[in-house]
Length: 175
Image 1 (cartoon, rainbow, N blue to C red):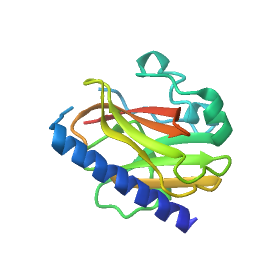
Image 2 (image 1 turned 180 degrees about the vertical axis):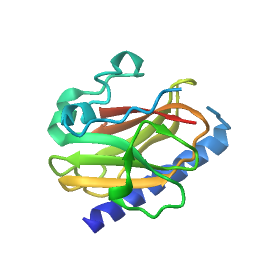
Image 3 (image 1 turned 135 degrees about the vertical axis):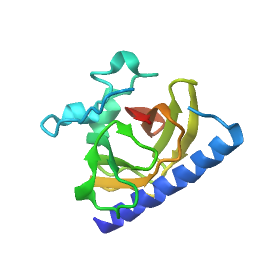
């Protein structure tokens, strides 16, 4: 499991650096209550779109989600804390000092280069972190990675693609 965590952390760092460069180049800046996701219903975790369908910029492909994922959620660790999956709190609302975490429960292996992540600014209707492919194979099982939040205050969506098909949309807010 430690290798999975390391791989996810590396991918998230690559995405974060790309996002930071995008933010610096475009000079873009961007009050949803804290909405914890229930552990009792994996479909609600994986389908962040279900209860917020009308608020999403686009709908994920449910067939692709069901093929590769059991659940997915966003969480946070307070800034300055060491990475520890047990300390991740599920949320959709982040402070700029938090560490932004993405957790995926993967059903079957995802080939190298097939999984991509992007961050979409819903107010400005543009990607602030362009789609970036994960260079390594992701084996089935639980995987989680965290990174610092390098976004201005605003509302966003974390989009996850498999084979360039949108599988997951997770709305969140940075305060």
